[in-house]
Length: 252
Image (tube, rainbow, N blue to C red; front, side, top):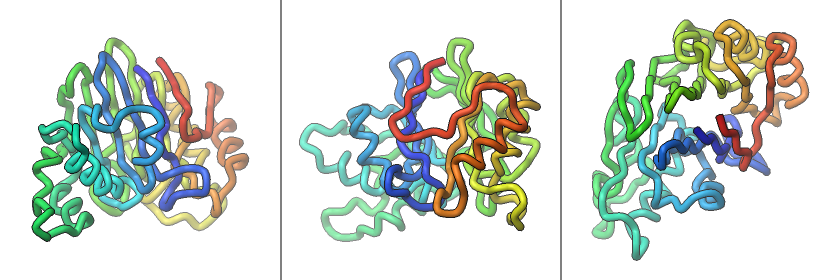
C-alpha cells in the first residue's frame, strides 16, 4: 500500500498544511480518507481528483469533510468529469450534512448531490472496497466518529481519526504496519476527556498494539509543539516515529 499525506492540520488549516486528508493507494484503487478544509488543492499535486475510487469521511466536523463541497463543484462541472457518482462513506446523516454545507438550491444545483456522490452510511464492521478490506469502529469523540483499518495483500494501515483513549483503537491497530494516530493534546494540561490523544497516549497505543511504525498527525500547532509531541511519543514507543507533513509518502 501507499499512503500520501494530503493534509494533517488539526481543527483548522495551518499556514503550511490543510486539514485532515489521506490518500491510500493499492491494487490500482484510490481511496481518500477524510476531505478536510483546504485538502482539495493539495490533492491535485498528487493525483487527478477525478480518479478517486471512493471517499471515507470519518466524522462530520468541518476539518474532516468540508472540501467534499468543493469537490462536488469540480466533479459536476468539469468538461471531462466522470459521469458516475463516487461512493462516499460516512456517519449517520452524512449525505444531509454535506448537502447542507454545500448550500445550493438554485437551478444549477442538484439538491441531493447524488449526481456526484453515492452516499453510504458507515456501521461498525468490515467490508470490501475494491481490492481493499476496510474495518471501521466507533471511537471516543463528541460526535459519531469512526477509526479505520485498511488492509491489502498482507499490509495494514490503522487510522484513529479524532479520538480519546478507547478500546476500539487497540483492535483497529493490532499488529498494523502503520499506525496513523492523532496527537492533538500535550500531557500535563487539563485536556477534555474523550476528544483527542496526546503524543504519549499515541505512543502507548503503538506499543500496546505492536504497530510497526507510528505517524503522528492532527497537531494544532498554535497550541502545541511538534517537538514536545514527538518527545512524548518516543518516550512511550521505541519504534520509528514521525510527525507527518503534507506530501509525505509512505509505502508498506
